[in-house]
Image (cartoon, rainbow, N blue to C red; front, side, top):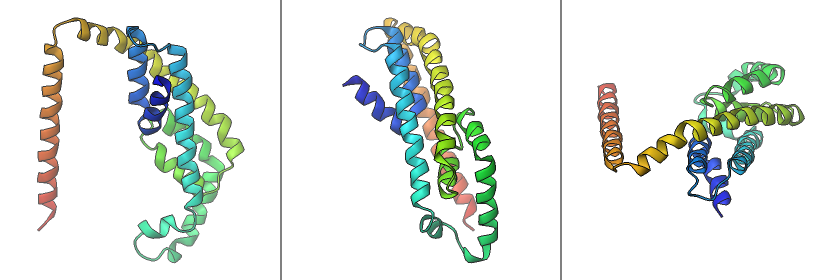
Length: 187
């Protein structure tokens, strides 16, 4: 049951779920082995990646038309150029996005699907990148976060209170900044 929950958590938010599960495996109180955490996280991340790829592939005809303002017909030549470029160099974009905190992972996978990038070329590269990425996150969680979690749980709970307070203050500051930024846009 724990691994099913981990799989679903990785589908939704991979890095945080992987780090947390690895830290719990290091703690030892939960029945999680680090090997199974890594394996489940790799499979969950690969499934999530290919879901985004196939959404892009399904959305080739109708998805861009909903979100692109103006006439799409006037940009058909540019769209074809980008698709050809992605077919030729898409693996490099994928590797860079995957190994750099995954910030552009979803748009790259959607674009690769829309460009009909070759799935047999993507699968081995995605698997190797996922092993490296998830393995690194699991090692950080197991050896870096694990002892920290143990210290926090064994010590006074004041750390948790101060941490929750800090997160709440950051959230309120971000909310005020967002409202101020939005009000500055409106004349």
